[in-house]
Length: 203
Image 1 (spheres, rainbow, N blue to C red):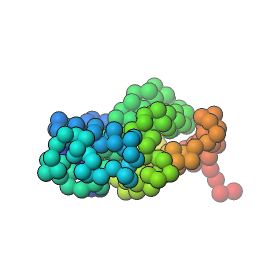
Image 2: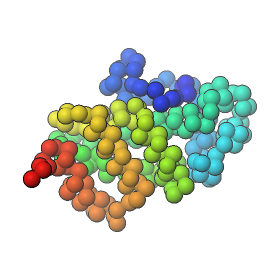
Image 3: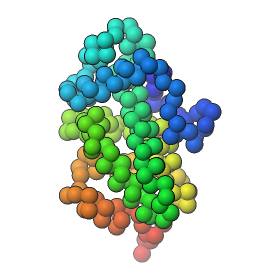
Image 4: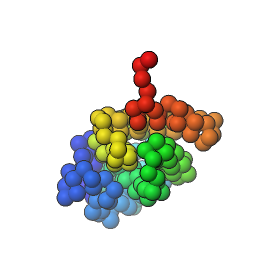
């Protein structure tokens, strides 16, 4: 797997619809990302340096930098890998929901549950590290493509912008959760669904 960058768009054989398909992974790169994941939990994302990752992965710095030229490239590669994994699971869980509004709520709640249940992912949304996740999420074409791919096919008005907005809502709820899932569901149904399906007017 090559190091990811902000320009890591969904080009390639599958085109934009390839967002669920994992890229051909190099075993060494995957081992490095797995080692980084453990450190993110133990030390936090901000406090994990490249030297720490090299030692945890049992490789030299030269090997590490061959796959990931800097810490930001490593972070982006990790986020993109995990975003694809979560999205694939969420898509499988929600694929039979036909109603567009219900599907959007189900997708967002399932995404929140999966991230919160995984220590290597929720570590990105602690007080000291949430800014890094938000920065990557807001500037990533991959995250945008994944979010767009999870939208109901009946929702096609400015799909990319809508996907960016929904991704931001998910990240904001991870940083500042509702009281419980029932509260978050109510907020999504009341405020998000009407906007997404075009039911809000300016009257």
